[in-house]
Length: 234
Image (cartoon, rainbow, N blue to C red):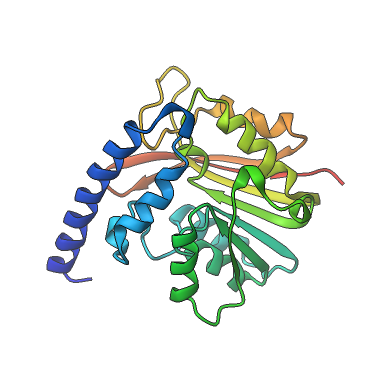
């Protein structure tokens, strides 16, 4: 992307971020912010610059994890909150049979259009009302930035962790990537970064830690992140 095109892209993104953030903060309490995701994709009207988290490439934290693995994988993978599909496609290239879902039907339709002919199965679904057939069905469950988009203090994150863990088959893995905050920092958002202690919800859901890392993304400043990998005992 040329310098001028990049500046134009960034300007559209900043405008969309301000409008979407204002909308989220004014949502009714009983909505829990869930309708916001569909609002963002609809308002984007096909312009990825107006979807604040859509960079049209796999998330760097996932790309690094894939690069370090150095192997092709077999089995089933579930990509949670797939958005426009870049992370799901990266997992498919590893060798997984990928199911990717998002709460937003508009995002799912957009991903299908972007990757027409892809073997990835894109589905519109709600994490909290996921198909029963997904329980214990996946060798890898991947989630980037879904937890941090859930409003803290409403019990949504704890509930979401239970659902994410439930998808993992015995011997399977869960990979989670999120912005990080210190334990004594109040979560400010959106998005709302996670403290290390919040990840204990996955232990409570029956998973075991395989690897837990803190890393920094040097885009729009230095932003601390957590990358956590869990396994379900056989």
